[in-house]
Amino acid sequence: MPVVWMLRRVASRMLQRPACGCQAPVLPSRFLGTSPQQIPADANFHSTSFSEADQPRVLITGGLGQLGVGLASFLRKRFGKDNVILSDIRKPPEHVFLSGPFIYSDILDYKNLREIVVNNRVTWLFHYSALLSAVGEANVSLARAVNITGLHNVLDVAEEHGLRLFVPSTIGAFGPTSPRNPAPDLCIQRPRTIYGVSKVHAELMGEYYYYRYGLDFRCLRYPGIISADSQPGGGTTDYAVQIFHDAVKNGRFECNLKPSTRLPMMYIDDCLRATLEVMEAPAESLSMRTYNVNAMSFTPAELAQEILKHVPEFQITYNVDPVRQAIADGWPMNFDDSNARKDWGWKHDFDLPELVTTMLNFHGSESRVAQAN
Ligand SMILES: NC(=O)c1ccc[n+]([C@@H]2O[C@H](COP(=O)([O-])OP(=O)(O)OC[C@H]3O[C@@H](n4cnc5c(N)ncnc54)[C@H](O)[C@@H]3O)[C@@H](O)[C@H]2O)c1
Ligand SMILES: C[C@@H](O)[C@H](N)C(=O)O
Figure 1 (cartoon, rainbow, N blue to C red):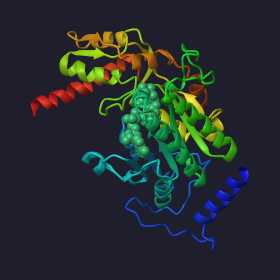
Figure 2 (cartoon, rainbow, N blue to C red):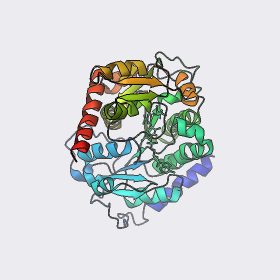
Figure 3 (cartoon, rainbow, N blue to C red):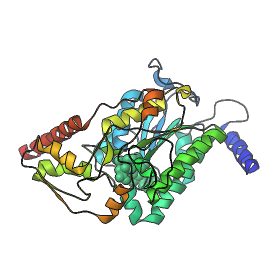
Figure 4 (tube, protein in one colour):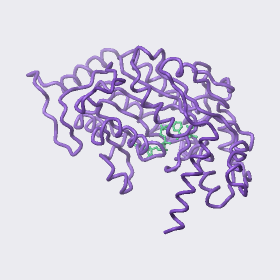
C-alpha cells in the first residue's frame, strides 16, 4: 500500500507542477481570484495583517444545509466574498445564489471535487455534506455512501492538494457505553447509528491522514446546533429548533423526545465562531485534532420552562418518536470540552437564557413582518 500511495502522490504532484517550474496555468472560472500563492499547510491566520491576496481560498461542501449558508456568510466577512465558495448538489435559493460564489459539487464524484479544488485554487475545505442521525437511519446505504465514501474522496483531495481540512463530528459519535455525563474527548465510542459510526470513522481517518501524511485535519464534535434562519436536516436534536417556530406561530409545540431527555446544545453563532477559531489556531496549540465543544445542556422540559418566561400561554405536549428517543438515550447528556478551552481558548457566549431570548426575538420579528405584509 505505501508504494501505491507513493506512486499516486508523485503522479499527483507531477500533475500539479509543470516540468518547467513556472506557474501552472489556471483555468478561467467565475470564482477565480488573483493570488498566485498557495497557502502553506502550517500557515497561521491568527494575525489580521494578511493582505487580500493571502487569504485562504475556501470551499464548503454540503453548504445548503442548516449550517453551511451561515458559515459562508461568516467566513466571507473575514476572508472576502469571492474567497468563499459554497457548494451542494441542490439548487440554491436566489438570495443564497446572489450572496456569493456557488458551485455544484457532489462529494461522491471525486473528479468533480478535484476539478473544483484545482480550478479555484482552494486552500481550506469545510466538509459539511452528511446525512444526519434520523435520516441516516431511514436510508442507511445512502448515509454510508455520503458519510463514508464521500469523506474518503474529500480526504484524498485534501491530502493531494495540501488543503487545511475541517470535518465536523458530533455528540452522535458517542454511544450508550460511553461516559454520558459528561463525555470526555477520549473515551469508548461505540455509537449505534450509521451517522455515529461514520463520524467516528471520519475522526479516525482524519487523524490517520494527519499522522501518516501530514494532512492538516481539524475536527470539532458539535452538540445539537440551534439556528433561527435555517432548517435542520433530519437530526435528533431538531426539536430544539422547531420549538421556537411553533411557540411564536401557534403558542404550542408537540415534542418528539421525552421531557427528561438531556442533550448538549449550542447556538449557531457560537458554533461558527468555534469552527473558525480552531481553523485559525496555530498548529502548535492543538494537542489533539478532534475536540469536543460545548455551550449548554438542557431537556425539552427545561427549554419549555425558559420559553414560558417569554410566552406565558405556551404549551408543550409529548408524542415520542421511538427512533429518535433511542438515539438520544445513547448520546451524551453533557460534554466535557475542557481541552478546547485550554488549548485554543474556546469560550461560548450563549447559555440557555440568551439562546431563548435571541431565538424568540428573531421569530417574533419575522412573524410581525409577515403579519404586516
Ligand atoms: N446541525 C447540527 O446540529 C449538527 C450537529 C453536529 C454535527 N453536525 C455536522 O455539521 C455538518 C453540517 O450539518 P447540517 O446540519 O448543515 O446538515 P444538513 O443535513 O442540514 O445538510 C447537509 C447537506 O449535505 C448535502 N449533501 C448530501 N449529499 C451530498 C453529496 N453527495 N454531495 C454534496 N452534498 C451533499 C445536502 O444536500 C445538504 O444540503 C454535517 O456534517 C453534520 O454532521 C451538525
Ligand atoms: C447532533 C447532530 O449531529 C444532529 N443535529 C443530529 O441530531 O443528528
